[in-house]
Length: 98
Figure: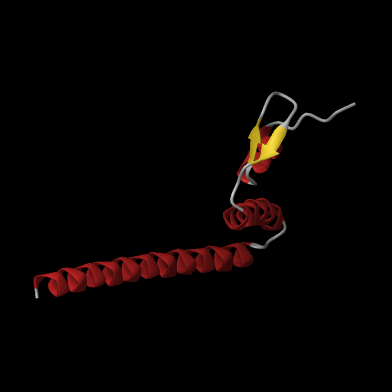
């Protein structure tokens, strides 16, 4: 008897880079690095839901603060990367003008 993945399992399989060929077959078509990163994020998110069930209110608050700090840091890094990209583009334009 074959197991037919559905729901979260099917989303995980597809997030890991597999494409449905038909109702029973999937083939890997992904990029290994991005697949591993996305799969890791899915597993971490699912495991965090389980961990949250056993956390005290203080631990949940601490976790929320950590998440907020991480999001702020990522936003700052994206903004800095965008700024560096813009500066590089301006520099390239200035070189062409001269």
